[in-house]
Image 1: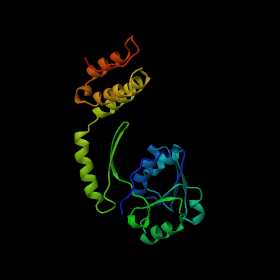
Image 2: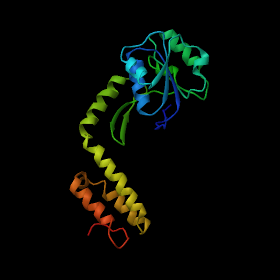
Image 3: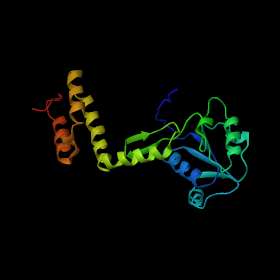
Length: 210
């Protein structure tokens, strides 16, 4: 059965991470970037966690995890170094919670893909847990193609899209303009500026290239 890829808005959402090691730390950083409210449940913590604690970015409960710790959490990540504990956690979640078991993806209902992020551009690679190493290898190959220049390019596309939709004109014409700005020539700042100036024309109508 295929998995269903999805982008989640986790801003302000409660997440619980069981485990305080390097893997748990890596999962924490990813969730922090998404704006989740994170609680770490672990008797001990990897040293890098302390900066996050001092800055108030995460909460730490210095204890073994219990069922009550998972209450109201949308995301649960079992990242302890004990397989039996991770298995136990997978059995404590409710059917409406998302759980990831780092050492056995079959015990959870989601896994985190390898990804490339360039500002608003996100490219994810998953293997359904078959080979995370292969997913990382493919991610690195993709990263060489979609370099940091795409960060500014996506900002241009967002701005241009807003201007195109604000213009008067037939829906087909707007579609042509949206396709036009994805052409390679618009990777340069000069052509991006020229396009935005076209959209700022006085006639109030969208136009294709002459």
